[in-house]
Image (tube, rainbow, N blue to C red; front, top):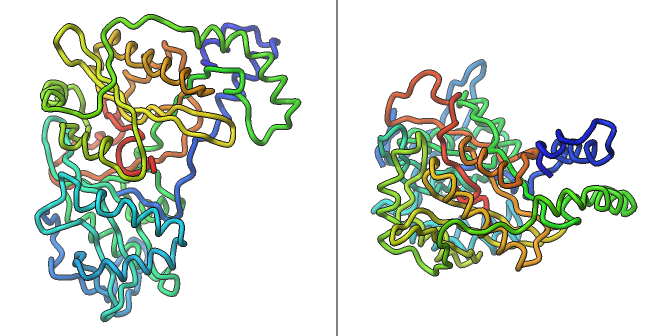
Amino acid sequence: MPQAAARLLPEWCPASAILRAHAAAEPSPDEPSPDDARTTPCYDRIDAKGWSAGSIDTPGRTVTRSMATVNAYLPEDERAITAMYRRVLGNAAAEGNRLRWDWQHRRNPNCPPEGPQIWIAREGPTIIGQYATMPVRLVVNGQEMDASWGMDVMVAPERQRQGLGEALFRTWDQHVGASLGLGQSDSSYRLFQNVRWPNVGPVPCLVKPLTRRALRRASWPMPVNRLVSAVTLPFVRIIARVRPLAAEVTAIRRFDDEFTGLWDRLASKFAFIVRRDAPYLNWKFIEPPHVRYSVAALRRGSELQGYAVYRHVWEPRGRVTLLVDFLVDPENEPGMLTLLRWVDREAREANSDKIRVFSLHEGFRRIMKRSGYFQVKSTMGFTTKINAIEVPHDFYQHTERWHVTLGDSDQDR
């Protein structure tokens, strides 16, 4: 229920108290996986052949690395990495990694010619750690650069808490124009703090209720959930009512070159955004072997004006439609509202109880709130560090025009 709707109710009204409490307490959908830290030319170059890790000074302490070295992934490392993945993160995680590995690394259109950007910690012939990253092209204040999302970091159990994670992290950061982290685990967040990265904060999460079950919580007793559903149902019906589309929206199965033209027109509207051209969009949302997305294209006349990527999932509290990614001119409010209304209709057809979206851009969030979304607690942390260019001293404090969504990095698995 939107906070605006709660403000319209008197303080003594039970629905008002419920709505305010729910907006403050609603958890984010997915807890980060263990050590799921989200993360070419070399910046402050380390020897590309390998970094010998005897010791490294950090503020207030020295971390010993024994005889470990950190260098780039080699094709013959794949079997040893799979075995370590299974030992550190378990069979289920290892099987999921095996399913998506070739798509995620080799088929990435931004993968460099020398191969996947994975950093390996070695002790003699033995692999004792890895940091896998997802290369992308990033536009910052109109300048495009190589960047990568940090993804899977892991260290052999017997070598944990010896500074190897930090060695892997620093090696990655020093070999990329911009390093990016999304949805960090607690241990990864502490690592970012240790190396004094800018803390951008979590990507805001917004929810739109569609049914009386939308505001239920698994931790509440059933009588309480039923009471909440009964009290809030009239307001949910108002928010969830069907509204007409103001432009043409069609479902598509592939992004053609027209979407690269859309990217070229809109890139300058954002201060921080990953390049969203047709090759990237097809790789990210059409070709994944482990998840299926629906895609809708927005048109006004013959002109392509935007797109939305979404999917429907089951969660403990009911069925949810995730608005995973979208792109439209931030100044085109009717176009953004039309995409949101299309997703509303798709969610209802899928019998979803609510829609959830993560969006950092202030203008998009403002439009969403006018469409019935309200902001809830978010645990999808976000951090970044720009190495390729100088940025203003207050760059990391002003994210109003930054476009980051759930579809960035590999959060939606």
